[in-house]
Image 1 (tube, rainbow, N blue to C red):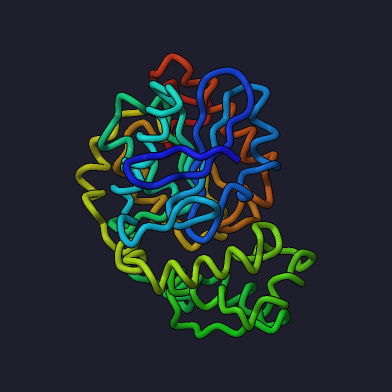
Image 2: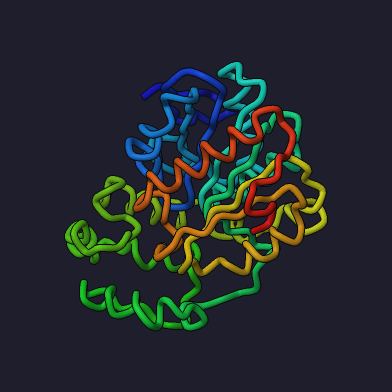
Length: 299
């Protein structure tokens, strides 16, 4: 895969397709495999799709610091500059949604539309543990236990939970999860042991653990100033539905879509549903202006 130098670091990227530019940003602990090939395959016929790996992830460099959503937004615009992308449709999953949001706040002229797939935004959700997530208590806890993974109900669904799931002692369990019927971070889908080892290193050798918790200027007030057409796609069982509720009240040009029966990682497990919603949204906003859907702008 080719790399782009942004500032003093190199970031791994891949580009495919023809048409309007669409840039996709994965979440924490993931890499380009979150989007490729499943989601990208469904979009490359309509867009020139660019995917890349956040600093500290995949084959991108792991500097000692610079892991806030603001830092990552500047990385993104640096990639766009290097590739000659003046303006793009941005798509971000989980923490990647915060990166996309922060890019829209800092460089709105570079963003044609904004799609947030189960975006996690620190300023919009109070601290929550697994105990506060009904789907964990009712369903997922038992599924994890069936694989031999036991997590304390007091753990937050954030970098700390990923730290526990990346434990090298769970490598065999993670690799056996392919047929478990649900998405498991650091499973075989994204390089498994290598991705888990990178996460362990990221947490121990850099400022990432602190940086990921930093609002870094992505405040309610700044988010409320976004006037770009936006789409929020969240899983019915997501732990971050509070974020969706807050976004609906802050971004006046927001269309919301709920993925039935799915949770936080819905783009990876329901790629056809996600790609269809994304393409329909961009089609209806191709002139850069928000066009209300038949079922309502915030439905």
